[in-house]
Length: 344
Image (tube, rainbow, N blue to C red; front, side, top):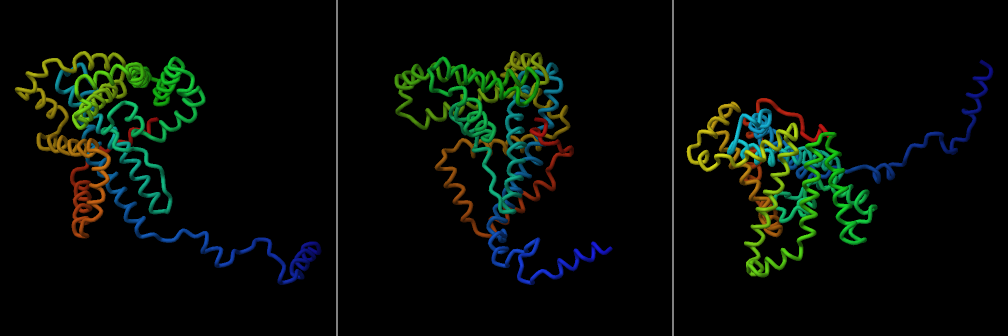
């Protein structure tokens, strides 16, 4: 007790102006380090979160109903159902993943944190290389900086550049899971880029000879359509449960397609098997068509559209907010799925 009293006395006898053991910051220092409330950040963050929730709960999860029905038993279908499920999955995975990112970015912005943009209208890409500049930007940037460039990038000739591209995309497939379907998906995208690299000169001569160079809008539309088709073809391997399923889908994708488009019976059977309605199905088709149109427009037009939307009157903007909220409340899928990229 004597020792404790001596210690207490020693502390009590310290000069009052001596620096304390745990100094309290001055009020000015506290203000300097404090994140101040930013109403504009809250508005923009709320918009991102609302839009992300709509993409996930209304678009992605409702598309998943049809995708899961077909890809759970692909050998039960041929032609149109396989095409529909594959196209729907392209937009399901985009709306699911980008919706998650939008919610995260919106919440972070409200808290004063700016996260990087991870998607930049990827289905508006005009080449597979352009797609990878727009899709999952964080992952593609990481592979570029920590795998492709350390391997030598494109600085050591076309042979080594081709090897580096192949390595990067095979690794990106493995990153998604230890399944041959992911390896095939990554390898397929690597092959796309290698063919683009090897045929660059030939394609330039073809564009010049065909006269497409004089019609840039048509040329861009063709490039966009081909790129979208290649990306959707790759999604078959990404989504299929096995390589056997993937190869069945690839070989039966266009079987009896003209007849199925004419009579509509196959589509009606798919809607019934999925437990959906014709109205709900076509509403989804309209939504992803509008989304694709937004991706496909030139960058300058997209920025102009955003600026036009920002200039809306208050009642117009709030009308859009209420429309999205009502959509989430009434058209969310009955069974909400976990985010797809939570698996990786």
